[in-house]
Structures are given as C-alpha cells and as structure tokens.
Image (tube, rainbow, N blue to C red; front, side):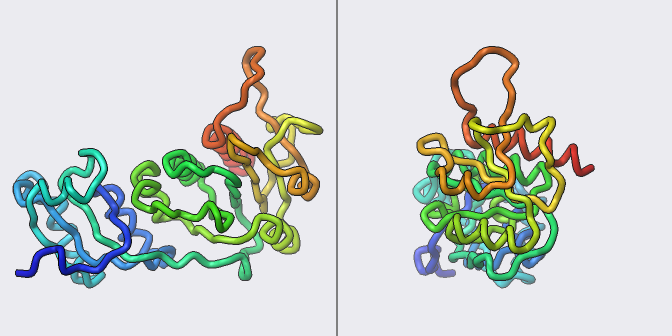
Length: 253
C-alpha cells in the first residue's frame, strides 16, 4: 500500500465535519473540490467505525482513497488537535463569477474580512440564516480553505461562493433586480425599519477599512444596528453580518 506522501493535493480539510460538508457540497453540485484521499488515524478504527463506514461508501461514489496512518502523520499535516483523527487531502475549488445570476434570493458580500478565521465565523452564521450565496472580492477569496472550512464548521464548502470585483458585482446584482443594502452609520436607517425584502444583496465591510464611499453611494439603502446602550465601538464584521442576516430571515419568513 503506497503512503500518503505520493498524493498530490493543494489543501487539507480537518475533521469529519469539514470532510462531510465537502461531500454534501459536491453532491449538491455546489462545490467541485476534488477529494484526493482521506487519512484516518489507525488507532481510531473502532471508535470511529460509523464515520469510517460512511467514508468508505462515499469513497466509491466520489473516487477517493482512504488510508490509515499514524496520529503523528496527521498531526504533522494539521494545525491544532481538533481534527479527531480524520482529514481530507483535497484539490482546488472552482469559483465562478457573477456573469450568471439568479433573479431572487439573499446574497452577502463580506468586503474586507481578511482574517480566514473571521471569514469562517461569518460564513457559519450566514449559512445558518439561510443565505443563498456569498460574493468575495478577488483579494478576499478563500486563500486558506482549510482554516475557513474549520472555523465555519464546514459551511464554506456548502455555500455558493462567487468571486468578482465589488463594483462589478453590485452593478450586476442591481441589473438583476436586487436591492443593494450596505451596513453603515451615516445616512442610515435601523434594520428594524429598513426594507429588507428579497431579492437582496447585503454588503458588510471589514473591521479595518469598512465600506468605501463609492460602494455606499451605489446602495439603495444603508442600515445600522442599534445598540442596547451608549457604545461608540463597532461590532465585528462577522457579528454585524449575523445580526442583519437573521433579521432578513425574520422579515422574509
């Protein structure tokens, strides 16, 4: 049996949650990331028998190898120790542009969230809130997919993610009939009074530079989150996106 060192891969997904999410994304035709092989800690054969049975069945459908290796081998490939003895060696994912858009739904453009952990936290909440898709500027694409998948509890592998220039994306979504809503303070309206009906594109800026004036000028509406007490600080981009996304869910239920 050849060792895993003979496998060609470009990223690693850690843990059963991330690996099973990728399989689900592939089956839903959302994600074309190739699974090259799944490595399993050889000491987990008994404790992980359910997961191993699932992976063996899926390995036939998705044409990937399963290899039992030492825990040291897995630890050498991963960050931390939360992988549970299961990782996937994977290829790249195709990210489409905004040339073909739906005419309904709720999409989010997290512009400027540069830290992969923060992006993952945001995607986890946005997936839970029922967001239909995510737009990422080229500089914010998932450069560290394993970290984003782990911090997003695998949801990054199940979301429709497209990569396009911010100005171009807004123009194309406007042309498709979407309302453009930006999170901001100046000339804003509270999210509890704003028009949040779908189809909707929500733009949330990162903590460092926020949303540019040019993008704000393209918005149909600027919304803010009112606080429960006097507070001059800002919520993290992930927190702001979460609060607004669940309000959109509530309004459209």
